[in-house]
Length: 417
Image (cartoon, rainbow, N blue to C red; front, top):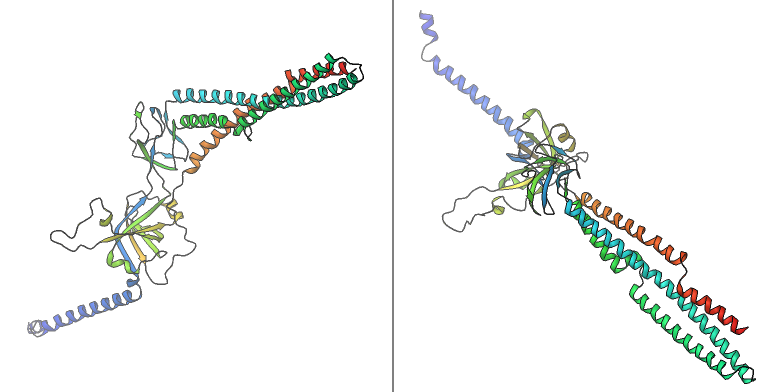
């Protein structure tokens, strides 16, 4: 009993307490030294935030023409291809308008084509009148010589002189008509005649109006926020749904203003999504730093010059690109929470092999195709109503002026004989 009491004597208990406190202090000292070493070598070169979210393009799908929805070919969460038809409008009126425009273009081409054919006729007539004038002048000179010798009568000479005057006036009239027609046609071909171009523009407008009754996906992605129904009347500019490109995303990390000093464009970034936990790491790089704080661009920016003022730490959005190959393996939806860590060492640069997603979106190829198809339709109409008519008019049928020229030539030859 004496020995047991000796073990718990009052002088031994403070000694144990001192040993425990010393061990704890040593442990804290080691931990502090370890953290200090980590901070000096690594920690101070990292800036982290949990105020980060997945962002991306939300491309609205809107109608360009008024109409009634007759078919709905896509719904929320469905994947769509770029250019895929997702909504159809009633196209009855648009088809009628296109048929009318095509008929007008064909009629205009035929009429202007006839003008070009008439130019050839007037050229032939002018050549005929020149030949007739030359022949009548030759007859007049011959009859004048015969009249001087007393062989030809005065009446024959007067008729020859009258023929020369008539042929001169007819030649002048033919040349004037040819000049007027050429001024109307200008120095253009059939396809570039102003009236043909005007009719072609109407065909192009009608064709585009018909194509716009088929509302297509401007980009590839997933349908979201659909708010249109079959039978609904829609107007130009009315949003019908949105398409979210799953491969065109980025991270918006909102860093405190005190964290921005070391952040630069091109620095490597490591991210973790709450949806996948810490087992999946995403890599990327800083691709942009906001031009202002979030509050400065809010709908109602704060007016700090009024009332009592309390300092609030501001945050600036930093845009981070995500590696393409990692998104293919682990899809990220817009709005997901992320934990972001930027490596801010001065010489830190993301490796050149790291290819991040380009946030730019292009839809021109979808709409450029419509213009190309319209131009092809116009070219086919002009070819079908232009070239064949030229050949038929200029080669198959002799003109009245050419027949008159041959008749006058035979008569002149007879008088000369």
